[in-house]
Each structure stands twice: as C-alpha cells, then as structure tokens.
Image (cartoon, rainbow, N blue to C red; front, side, top):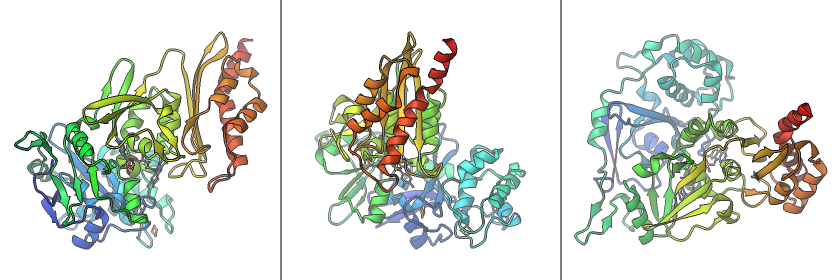
Length: 494
Ligand SMILES: Cc1cc2nc3c(=O)[nH]c(=O)nc-3n(C[C@H](O)[C@H](O)[C@H](O)COP(=O)(O)OP(=O)(O)OC[C@H]3O[C@@H](n4cnc5c(N)ncnc54)[C@H](O)[C@@H]3O)c2cc1C
Ligand code: FES
Ligand code: FES
C-alpha cells in the first residue's frame, strides 16, 4: 500500500515525481499537461478512442531488474494509479545531445506527420511496440497502431517509418537503467498495516478534506475488508470504463478502490481443468493465454478496442461492467466460465450465465466483488467457435458477437452452448436456439427453425449500431457458419 498519504509517487525519466494535493479523479493526461507541462501528449477525444494521449507506463519486472511497459491512453487513467510506476512521454525520447529516437527520426524522414496532432501518440505506440519486438512485421505495426487515428497523413508513410526505424535496432531500446533503483525506492509495502486492535487499515493514496479517498490496497484481504466497510465504493481495475465516466459523465466517486496493485488478483492459476484468471489480469494477457486453446476467442480479443485499451482493461472489468455488447461474455458463457465472487472472507461460485439479472444488473451484493474468472480448458472433441461482427475490424463496438461450443456424437450435435451479445439487455445464452441444434446432424439444421427460435427468444429492437433485421440475420448466419465445417465433414463421409 502507499506509504505516503496524499502523495502519488512515480518515476519520470530518472526522477521521482511527488504529486501532492491531486484530486482522486485527476487524469494522468491532465497532470502531465497542466502540472508537468509535458504538452507533447495531446487530448483528442478524452475517451480512449483516438490515441493522441498514448504514453508508456512501466512496472518493475518480476526479476526486479528492468521495467515492463504497456501503452496507455492517459486521458482515461487516473493519476493515483501511477503510484509506484514509471512513465515515459514523447518528451522522454530525445537524448540529451538532441538525437531523436529512431522512430521519431524515421517519422521525419518518411513524412509520417502533417498537422502533427496525432504524432506523439503514434510515436509512443510504435516505441512501445519495438521495446518487445524489434523486428515487427507490417501487420504487427498495423495492429499496434489500431488505436491511433490520423486524419491527415494517411497510414502508408507511418508504416514505412516503423519499418525504417527498425533498421537501427541498437537504438530502439529505451535506456531506463536509472529508473530501476527509483522504482524500488517507491515500491509499496506488501503486507497490510494493522491497527492496535489488529484491524486492517488501508492507507489512502489520496484523501480529500471531505473524506473522499482513493485507496490502493496491496492484498486481497485489504480489498475485501475495505469493501465491507465501504460497500458503495467504486472498484477500479483497467479504468477504461470508469475513466470514461469521469471524463464524459463527470462521475466523482466518493471512494475509489484500485485493484491494480493486488498481487493475488494479477495471477492466473493453472489447474488441470481450468484457468483461474485474477480480476486484474489484462485482456492482452488473456489473449496470449487462450491463443492456442481457443483461437477464435483470441481473435475476438485482438479486435477488442486497441492495444492501449487491452493492455489495461481487464476480463473481470468487462464482465462487471455488464454492457449488453460486452465482447468477452459470449465466449466465456459458451465455454461454461464461472466467477469466484468474494465478500469479506467468504467466497461463492456463480456461473457467468446466471450473473446478469437485467441491463447492467448483476447478482453482486453490497461489498462483493469478482475475485477471479474460472475458464475451463478444452475437452476432447469439443468444438469452440466465436466471431464478432462490427462495422470496423478493430476499435469498434459489436453489432453482435456470438460464440458456441459443441461436440459431435454419432454425427449429431451434442452439449451445445450458444451465447450472444447485442441481442438482449445483457449478454446471454440462447437456450431455444441450443434446443434447435441439440441432437441434430449439422446438415439437418434448418435456417427457418433458427429464425423462429430467435423470434421467440429476443425482443426485436433496432439499435444505433444495427437494425434488428440485420442483427437477427447475422445471429442466425453465424450459427450456420459455426456448424458448416461439420456439415461439410458429415456430407463428405456420407
Ligand atoms: C476506446 C474503448 C474501446 C472499447 N472497446 C471495447 C470492445 O471492443 N469490446 C468491449 O466489450 N468493450 C470495449 N470497451 C469497454 C471496456 O474497455 C471494457 O468493458 C473493459 O473490459 C472494462 O475493464 P476495465 O478493467 O477497464 O474496467 P474498469 O473501468 O476499471 O471498471 C469497469 C466497471 O467494473 C467494475 N469492476 C471492475 N473490476 C471489478 C471487480 N473485480 N469486481 C466487481 N466490479 C468490478 C468497476 O467498478 C466499474 O463499474 C471499450 C472501451 C473504450 C474506452
Ligand atoms: S485523447 Fe483520445 S484516446 Fe485519449
Ligand atoms: S498528422 Fe494530422 S492527424 Fe495525423
């Protein structure tokens, strides 16, 4: 937990910054621009969409010898989340002798910038990419830039600049050796503070005169204890929703509990049957975790938001947020995922398909939170398919996303689990469609039966992103596509 009340301490280019008197909802972007005058970082949309505000945020690596960075949309991150971390902005890149980073120099040489508003964010996304992958393919570069909008240059010169920068591999890596000892100096204590009576005390990182506060517990016990005492607190994980509410709806929660420093919640426990994914495991990490076992799930995640969104956003946050178009839930429901919910020292297990009780309504009780998402591993013979339909390939919201699991027993569909987003007030299973499929040979499934089941299951509603006619047609065609491969195999055998 934070050792210094009301001071957010982070490392910026070889110096410890002590931010005092900040509000609990001050954004990283506002602090960088208004207090540190790092105006290279721009504000375009203030909602995580344009990438003009991308900076790199780093934590000490597991060995304690280097810094692991992720790209972050600073407009939707709250300053107190930086406590104990390292930040690099576009101003961090130029060497004292004036030499530009290879990415910056290549942007100049390849005419990768016109008005320049998007350029710092683009440079930071690229510099972050080459820290981990100094030889990216063109597709990797394009993926890394999927959250950076440029409205005047066009992307070809920017992609060329990335390729050119990587010809100077020796200079790509940021020199952050000086930051490591400073990160150790500001590391938070990993044991809870106890009162004389033995009660856990969670020290606030920020407390206002009115008693509102931002706390950053270091252990699960501290989180649970704090939430029992303050059940109306806002939990903060990746901040990709909460940050939006702060900027766009002027939300100012009284108590904010940041989960990002809780070691137990950062872990994935691997058992024979399942992965237990802690509540602050990022979507980028989940994408890597499921890439072999469930490639379609990984593809849905590759198209989720953008790299800076996925590097902070969490699986549990997506579930807890409960948006009707949340993308991970159809995959998780089809795979039979369950949630470990905790209140105080008691836990219970709830199946994800029983978690929602209405639009953005869940079974979570006051003071209860998601501790982990339990994702079953693939079973022999199990088929899993998923697909997200949206107007743009990435950084777009689903018209619908569907996912299915089944196996084939004597050529018949068996154990069918089918789930959607975008069709109902919350993501959900589709039992009437499952019943149409169960026990049938794939070739015998009729489109008209699926259409009838869709009509009987959902209330027809046109939405901003798609008409009902479109959504229901897509919902049916996705099922046909998901079983088509089996239809072909059955036909070939026959
Ligand atoms: C630009 C942009 C693009 C996006 N693209 C997509 C997309 O393609 N698909 C999609 O589905 N979503 C998308 N989102 C929405 C958002 O990124 C996701 O819902 C994300 O997974 C939320 O996770 P988080 O960790 O950032 O949550 P936070 O913002 O930290 O929290 C979200 C909510 O969950 C609660 N919460 C967090 N953790 C817990 C917990 N452990 N227990 C109980 N409650 C908890 C918080 O109190 C809050 O109410 C996008 C958002 C933005 C800004
Ligand atoms: S300002 Fe647009 S993503 Fe942050
Ligand atoms: S250079 Fe103008 S928006 Fe990209």
